[in-house]
Amino acid sequence: MYTLLPLKVGECHTEEGPKMFFVRDFDKVYSTYFYFWYIEGGNTRILLDTGFDLADSKGFMPTMIQQPGWTPAERLMQIGVDPRSIEHIIVSHMHFDHLSNAVDLFPNARLYMQKREYETALYPPHPWFTAAYAPGMIERLTGDLRKRLEIIDGDMEILPDLKLMLVGGHTPGLQAVILPTKLSQRTCLTSDICFFYQHIEEDWPIGFFCNLAEVFQAMARFRREADVIVPQHDARVEK
Ligand SMILES: [Zn+2]
Image (cartoon, rainbow, N blue to C red; front, side):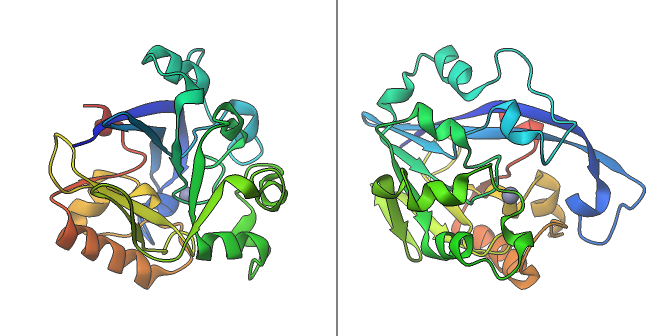
């Protein structure tokens, strides 16, 4: 059984409808909430993604809001966790709000990334694929972070009952997580396959993806393999 805590680092209130929901809601604007996840099991401290500092987000989302007290360092301090005690960071995918230069807060953590995500970063089929990465991150993957990277190829149980699932879809090598929590023995953290609960409830895809078929396949797989499905950018995850 793992303890799971969403840590909010940002909010944005100007998201375009069709980016949130594929080919619909052209006249709507949505609010998104940005989290990284603290996971603890036994004596092991784990993060899903790193969170980000405002400066890393401004180039991509100029209207991002990060209030005082919302940085990754402050969020961990608020729950009494020393960032240096984090041993494992699951990198769901490479977008700036998931892997950022906040990674430097966690010098003792191994970073788990899918091979397809790593290869896409190094050999993108088009610049679009790396346009939302934090500044300098591609160079860091083969530079100072290389020693800490665990490149995973496919599904893998990296800790007892904590499984990474390669699903792709949103990015080529996106990985979701399934683990036992107090919510359910099979709790799924979807990362950006589902921005909101509404995506699962309506089986409607996000509008920002590289492979639509994989997005649908991922949602179907979450339904088969999990009892509780937790999206990435929905304020209800805090309830
Ligand atoms: Zn993303």
